[in-house]
Length: 260
View 1 (cartoon, rainbow, N blue to C red):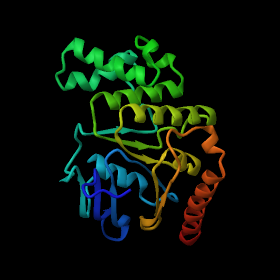
View 2: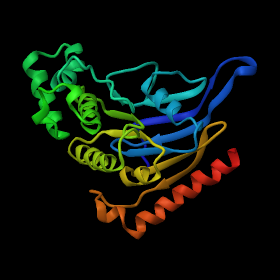
View 3: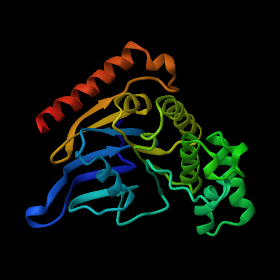
View 4: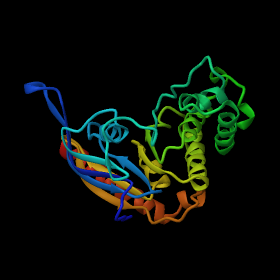
């Protein structure tokens, strides 16, 4: 997907950690555009800089050289325009589901009635409205992650950054949450950058799959996912899906072998 005004832009981004003999390059000369409303998944062997790239967009770490832009402005730190969801749910156990979703809205100074209405809207989008008054300890792993997604959406970010959000879940729950994410996206479209090790997941939810090469992390290949939305089980089992998945596997495996 091309866009003259990309939502997210990496411009020759490099990132190093450490100093002297102990330094290593996590990313080298990454140039990439992500369009407004696009879902991009990022895959690659361990150590290829997937999470580092996402953390740069989130403003959680800076670049060593180059520039990362969101809405045409350089990223200099975290901001409410970017919601971040990690593999661990990071819910407050002493707050109910709805209070967890309201938390960011309260920090923004939104009034009680308005933030409750907003929170209920996004809980409804992720299928948790009936659990609004429950505490996180009573929820399954999948429900906790849906709560985290609702909380991220509620503060109205234009960009959603997801780092292995379903990685700790069983296979069936993972598939269900992939469908839930796409359903939520279809109703309230955001730009999504999704980090994963699961190639099937990467293909199923994305417009494009970004394959990074390891040691140091750099752009290896961009694979278009020319499959229609909404996605469903029929698409997941189609020959077209299998062909794209195999292309991604080959790109990741070949690069992993070279890095080994």
